[in-house]
Image (cartoon, rainbow, N blue to C red; front, side):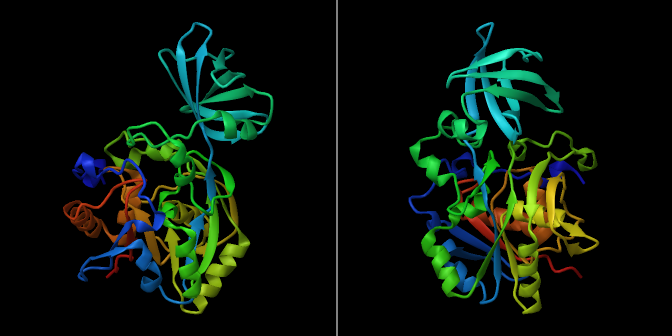
Length: 344
């Protein structure tokens, strides 16, 4: 299978550059199995599209202000994008500079303090931060929110709230689990009133989610690593839901990645650790029954994942429909409700 198999042409004006005034005002493209027609709905219709006893599973990761600026001793400007917080005020990070910094060098940070370069770990630098408090606490007031690269503006005050889900609680992501951005308290209340349950995983979304696939032969692609936690309590909720005839609905591809990573011999097991799972057509997703997701970049691993779930031809048709109907794409865009491909 080739990367080019997942290409599509997207008019640039359909890339959402800012959120809508209300989270739950987004459109929702419902994609049932073929040959049933697509349905153009809204996120606020979700309670009517689900059944009492169904279970929505959210990713409760919280985005950290992970973008920093500084300069090397030579005076060269540096941009730092933290990928992951580590013990001892250390972090893995991407560094943008005219020349790669060497181990042992220090970067004077615009927000105060220094970052010491300890060395390289694969595509990232390992840094130790010399700041007056814990790195996590310091970033909350010193860092800047890292908007995705396809949003062509600096993060503003509104993004501090809107590029964060209303249920975010576990600090550690550098990108939002964007399907969750559509939910506000009013929609959550309507879903509860409908008798729909909620569960949570944690998967700290890394900046690698925006990295392009650099090989055309997908068998040669190596996925970036992300940390996740799937609890025993959630697994029990999923078991009870399915035994009662309910459906498990993943809110976002990160939930699918987390739950599929927690499968052992076909059964969900509590799991906390790293995943590099790469899901593409030919892989059968078993942990969820439906998937709520945003529209994904051409040739991205996330587009490959949703194609594995709903079927590649079905996804191609859905994206053609969304472009024709002028849906808004990517992080601040609209959403799809996907049903699994009917395997013959």
